[in-house]
Amino acid sequence: MIAVDIEKGLKAYNGQQVLRIKKEFITGSITRITGPSGTGKTTFIKMLAGLITPDSGSINANNTIWFNASQNINLPPQQRHIGFVFQDYALFPNMTVKQHLEYATNDADWINRLLSIGGLDTFADHKPNHLSGGQQQRLAILRALAIKPKLLLMDEPFSSLDVKMKSALIKTLKLLFAQIGATVLIVSHNPQELDGITTDELEIG
Image 1 (cartoon, rainbow, N blue to C red):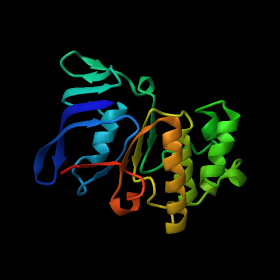
Image 2: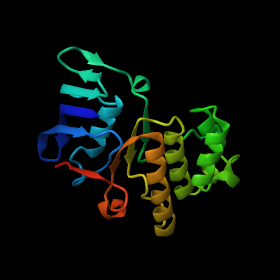
Image 3: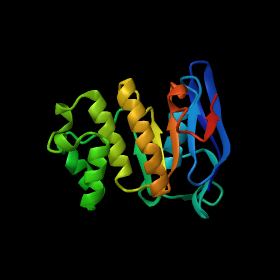
Image 4: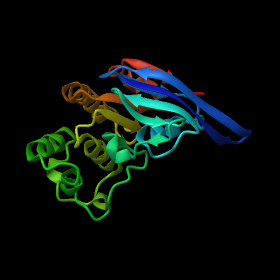
């Protein structure tokens, strides 16, 4: 279980506002995060990942303190064993599709399975600039899954996929999440697309 009780000041068009999140995420749950633009959805998952530091509060994951302001504890991202799908993909331009996954794991069977799941097995030697937006987005998802993360954070992960691909991928990912025992948080501007996969919801703003 991941227990979150944090605050972070945000700059908004009407001045300063405070993002307050107090919630427990059950191990293995899949939570969709919704809310208006600018309310702090991306900031929240980046705080979970250790990419942004909360102003106060604590984050505890499976009896390990990731962040505690009063105790001055703040584990770096690499110690949190998190998979993160960035909204802009954040791919490495000089790495091929397969190299992106090999950077995260040396399990060849797992890499081949991920490539097949993402429909990228025939593009393994391609670099990101030779991929479509949807293929780049799928690669970003596969890379995040390569380390078999216990917490997977996804920021608008299906925005560039067509309806057919999105539907098929979501069904497959639901099974995969269960297999690796991942707790998953998904930021989405279209929460209806997650109706068949999520077990919980967090509305921000």
